[in-house]
Length: 159
Image (tube, rainbow, N blue to C red; front, side):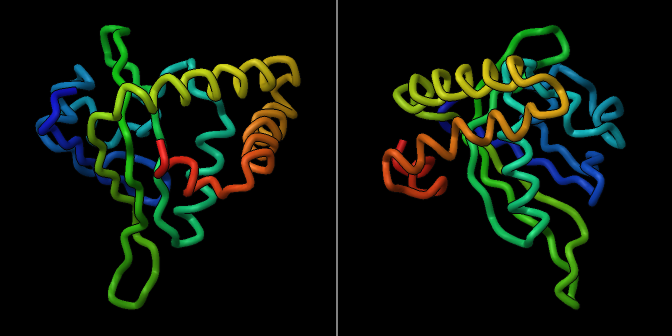
């Protein structure tokens, strides 16, 4: 990504894309028509641990903002990293109607840390098998946070 780029997208409650800005369309490699109505995981890179997405979903479904580093895969198989801010979208009555994400270029130093962490989480998930994958990946992250004595948000925002 370029320094001044911001990728923005919105989804419904099931994660189907309802909006994507021009930078999202550009970096994903998909046309707007291909993106609208598709599951947001259309750009999920296989290097991403399932536990990372489980954490994000648990936060935003609970009505909380979440920050995360995400490796996305474009239609042509290339990849790009983003630093994402994900938030629930509320109606006038305070009910969640969907989700909004704004992503920007991550700092290179942060990617070194995140790449190693995600590789360890993914390896734990693969060893555990599909049924226990999320729990195994989450344990790697939880153990790291406990060792450092910080929260997930503090870790992500410190990178």
